[in-house]
Amino acid sequence: QVHLVQSGTEVKKPGASVKVSCKTSGYTFTNYYIHWVRQAPGHGLEWVGIINPTGGSTTYAQRFQGRVTMTSDTSTTTVYMDLSSLTSDDTAVYYCARVETYPDYWGQGTLVTVSS
Amino acid sequence: DIQMTQSPSTLSASVGDRVTITCRASQTISGWLAWYQQKPGKAPNLLIYEASSLESGVPSRFSGSGSGTEFTLTINSLQPDDFAIYFCQQYNSFPYTFGQGTKLESK
Image 1 (cartoon, chains in turn blue, brown):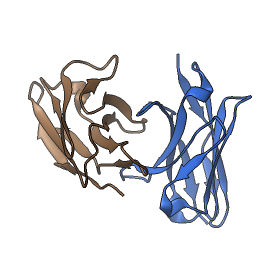
Image 2: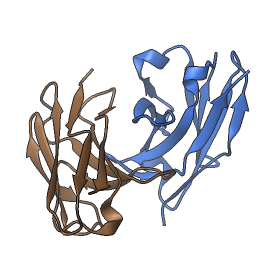
Image 3: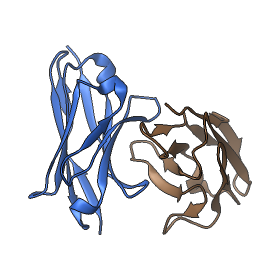
Image 4: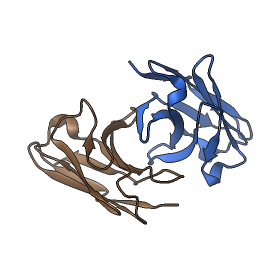
């Protein structure tokens, strides 16, 4: 059974950073990319970026360039997304998802709230 | 970036109806399109991939069609569990982009 389990709710102040984890199981970790998507309250889905767990190559959406870092740990089959210089506009649920050619299995989501 | 335009934004229908949602891409994406269903507080659930392939476990009343720039999701014989929000996503090129969503509500 494929599972992606994300870390818990985060509350951060403006200007801070947040690191969200995505622990995977039930498949060969290095055979699939992981992408990250976010959803602000009451809004649609926004693609943040993607990581190849083998070697760690990444592609980020331009609007997040310079603020986001995605990493992977093959020993724990976990992927991380680090987002810095947070503002209230970053308040959202962040999802990781496994990507074959298309995203199929998704994590449960992590709510990140940015508030002073 | 490829823009994905979904219509309608809201759709009112009744149990048993047949409904269609459309997704248009700003440039050709071949057949690299997925459809998702999302319920409140839950992650998106994959319904259709490669425009017309039904994900395992998804009821056969869901179907997808299209290629190039125009795509449709059809739900035959709506069931009470189908009232939700539906999104399309292109995965032809980075950044992967989503339609704005269609809220399917009970009439």
